Image 1 (cartoon, rainbow, N blue to C red):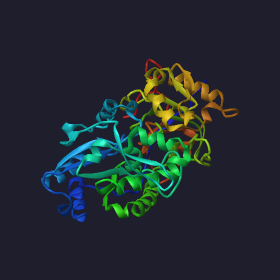
Image 2 (cartoon, rainbow, N blue to C red):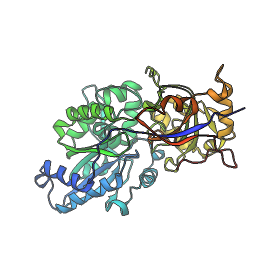
Image 3 (cartoon, rainbow, N blue to C red):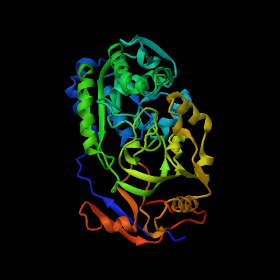
Image 4 (cartoon, rainbow, N blue to C red):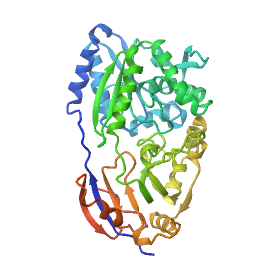
Length: 417
């Protein structure tokens, strides 16, 4: 079997980014008139989720520094539902995998799965809040605003999700996911609104990334304006979102999946697969076969999202902590996402199997794209037939001309530099 040659290209996205994170955070505190909100001696909780947000340790450190500047005491709460095996210790480990530690941020981490019920929505959904956040003198709800990997709505991932499933921990996740997609799509924003209204939330901080996974926006928002402004920022996030260079592929190889790249291991908006009961699959991009090669260390064995792939490797399979993954997927109720695909010995074996099943496509003419993960798709490999389509397009830069695929002694792709 002859593999097609692969070329390395770079996508050119038009982006703007925040150059001075510390200064931007400081200005946002001024915009919120933080001097009137934060008093000396107050204990202020900062929410930090399980996602791999660009520069997140520096952002958290800067937020903590602004709180300290006003004589108050900042601390971090891990704001994540069932991640980290739904344990306090596991969620601290998730933060550590993102570089968020007490040393890197200058803030104490207070992790607990205990919650306090603070109210109910009009539909009767109980609203829970992390006990440390509830007893704090103030809360800053911080979250990245972006397209959700499970559904489409005016509010998706962002501050209200952090206020609901994040601050509400495993108990809130269970309460919402019991209703399936309706729970997180339709009910979650209202739970978040109640959580903000019924706690000492000072303001939210929205983070938006550009197509190069750089920070494009850091914006503080007063509680009453969170829902409206978050919807506007979601639209801006959509416009900045990166995409694969082509819409039709025979094979997509994802070198590494993991919770630090997406809550589903792979961003469904990038790969064009959702696999949630009751949610329509995207029309594009179209991928015949998806190969997932490796699990990130930061995932701590949670391979949720492996069910989005068609083929995987023995290496990834051996890295799975089924207790952590199953806790997460059963909580979500989206069981398809933890189904194990065909397990091959290595990347070379997975690629051979996928090519064998492309039906009528010559091996050397297969449309193959290889990316490091779904968060970083600026630089990627494409097979020669795709390269010939893109090489004259000014939106792409050729980094390496087409060459034979390179595997290590164990049959895995040489990692991208």
